[in-house]
Length: 260
Image 1 (cartoon, rainbow, N blue to C red):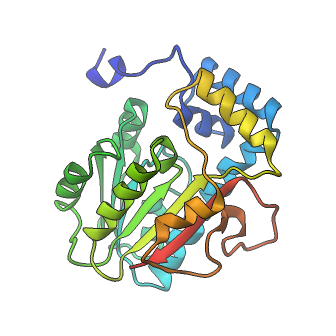
Image 2 (cartoon, helix red, strand yellow; image 1 turned 120 degrees about the horizontal axis):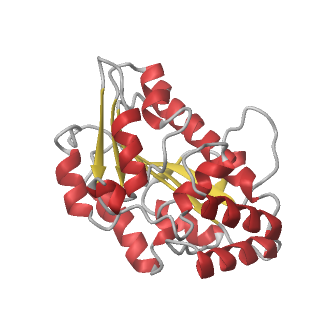
């Protein structure tokens, strides 16, 4: 057994693997599928959030590469590889785009090494690190990315795992402070709203049975991550409502894109 394999815990459901199950992937275990089905019973629409978040990623990356000229992406909390990963979307627009992925899940690491291969003109790298390791992430990312030029910081569904509000805001500020003017923050986050009590029930179930535990925040609290940035239209909204190609229902994942 390799060191990576020894770190994979198949006895408890894991968020990255459940997300993979909900989006039709095969990199999950019975414990993940069982928890995923139970969560879906509590909140039948939750599987659609994973798909909506993935589609938001594609639209945001495509916009940044096509309209904003971004050629560097730092994707922290990348999750398990699936269709249209950040590098695939970006390099489809700009083959010379560079992407650095960051995650600390051993299953993600095992698959990322094999699957996240970019174009010959560009470059795609992977870091085994935790979101909280800001200095280490920036130092390692600088080996692939030129941090004196604009970078898109991708934080999709990852700051939800930092329970303390001020710590989570501080992490995002430190990362953005290290990036050049013209950089962008792309962030999505599970929301809590009075009209979505079934979402709260699903999150409560997850936090009792799964790992890592997650924190919900209000739309207003999520908007705080973009303090000091120029929010792109339409602002912080349901990720399904961020420049959609077709009209789709709101989901309890809010997202936004801000320019430094």
